Length: 176
Image 1 (cartoon, rainbow, N blue to C red):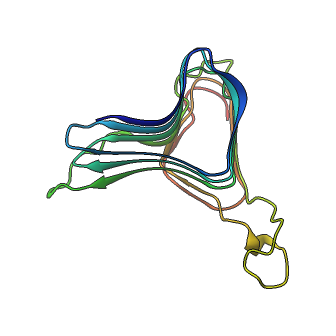
Image 2 (cartoon, rainbow, N blue to C red):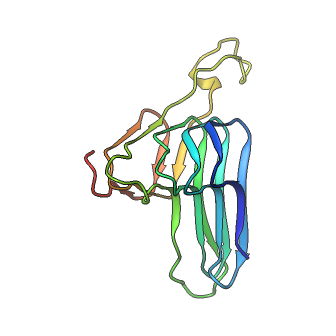
């Protein structure tokens, strides 16, 4: 069956979503079901997501769809990733199947006036996590983005200052 970890429905007004833990959705499927970690509905007012932890969607099975973040409202303008945003399909099929949509971020519903900035950077370390006697970049997690990114018709900024990106980026019809 379909799985959604966090649904921000019509009328939700939170402005900024700050994730410091884990938001995860997983589905086991043979029917092409979908796993969505963060689903922002049309009519919701969420303008910013800051991820310091993990936002992930995983589909396990012969086929299926996984989306870590989808914004159907067109209100989301800023995504800052200091952690992990990922969408994966783990195939259990004997033969190679055609996977469904594997999307880290889906902003394809955004119109021409819905501009978005994605920033991926290492957070500033505040404690000596590795116990080497120095608080430095080695004490901060390396950010990752795994899965495709779909932008809409607005203007986009996609900045990666640290970490890894594994997926295709579709800038839609807006200016980059």
